[in-house]
Length: 224
Image 1: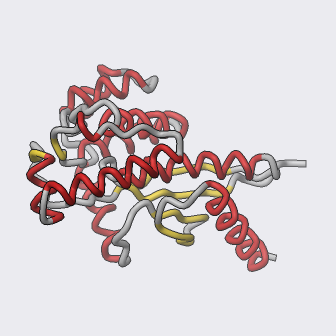
Image 2 (image 1 turned 30 degrees about the vertical axis):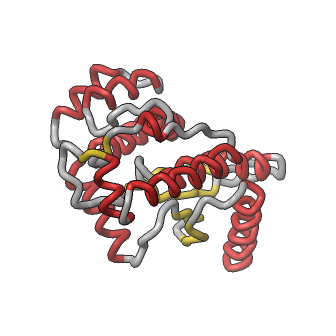
């Protein structure tokens, strides 16, 4: 008998959202739990910009966060909260290495480009970008950094560099981001199951798994 098709999970996220990296790691844990129950999924990464008006060259992170949160001290408090949550998910955040807040259009373009090749490569590129920014302090707004990350994730770095040197996909990414805003989405990560939004936020793996189980049960009951 043919296996049923995998369920689709869409994750709306931004490359500079720390909770999105934590959410990715917790989703992976949730999907491992569900795999043990015989469930199969395809994960698609979708584009959202936390800072849609960010200059193309990015800005100094410390001054940007001081303006956004009222003071550098408040920014450091929030970084400490993220670092604590990250450790619980097995991730190390190195805020001391992060010097700039980048524009993320190019990163989203690369993630989409990778997804056209395979979902496994898309996930690998997404992970490489998160790690580069949050753990290694690399400027993921720079095309040469992104091309190198593509190579590290298993893609052709030269082909990635040529793609990033073009404007291909930029308008599509902006349109996707705008579309989610028009739908009322304001927080990321946001998770959807077969086109139905489940929740926003970086919940622990067990809670993500339970939300997906409930979603699957409802969708299957409706289809019966």
